[in-house]
Image 1 (cartoon, rainbow, N blue to C red):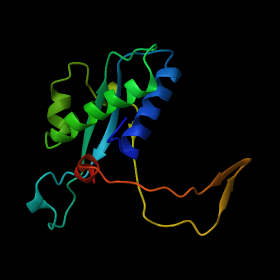
Image 2: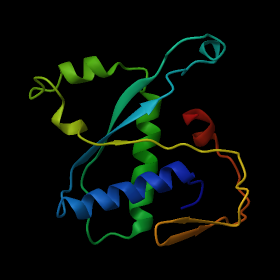
Image 3: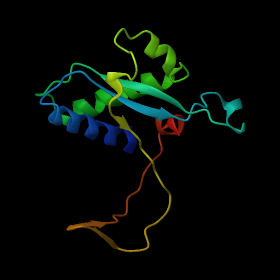
Length: 147
């Protein structure tokens, strides 16, 4: 799982959750919003460039390791981000069953990272206690491209 970002790891967890939730569905598709600034000259321009992309993960193996799932998700996400300039409307036009809303985008994934520190050592949500844990992280080129 080297060079894996928190976003990729979180998405792999989400696919594992959906796999369990759907009783072992091996072909899952999740929608994800991408910043849409795929060229450097688009970064300083003001405006909405967000594009939704489908993230389809096929051939999920219930007997494979979680590390294998993370690797599958990492490769799939990298491929899809490289093609994120392709408008969702054109993708939907190629899908034969799309009449009003795309059935394959019934769920979406959004990853947000923050640089803010937590002022408290622990946070309680209901009966659950969450604690901040110090960590060191190296930013990969995949994470920079997806921001």
